[in-house]
Image (cartoon, rainbow, N blue to C red; front, side, top):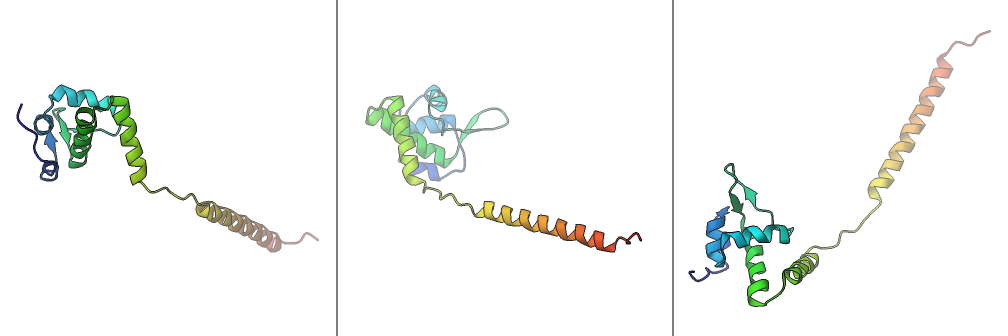
Length: 130
């Protein structure tokens, strides 16, 4: 097979076919198809004909997978774990807040107060039997 293209190549196009990506990575297309269920973060879109179309992010991910498996000699499980760890480091932790819960509680209290006022107004408007 021909030598791999430089890693900068994924940026050029919006979508690449499986044959383009397999040539770029110097692996057979069936290897890319095999990697899909092994790496859950790898989800290429399929066109109307059902052909896989890889976005630049997926091509970069595939380059990283290839590096881990072929160059660094990781097992698939080890590569998967490494990618998940890297992903966790890249994503900032989300701080959980009760801001929405406080707003909902305040709205419920306001609604309850309004219902109480409405009931009181209705009672005051009713004629007194006498």
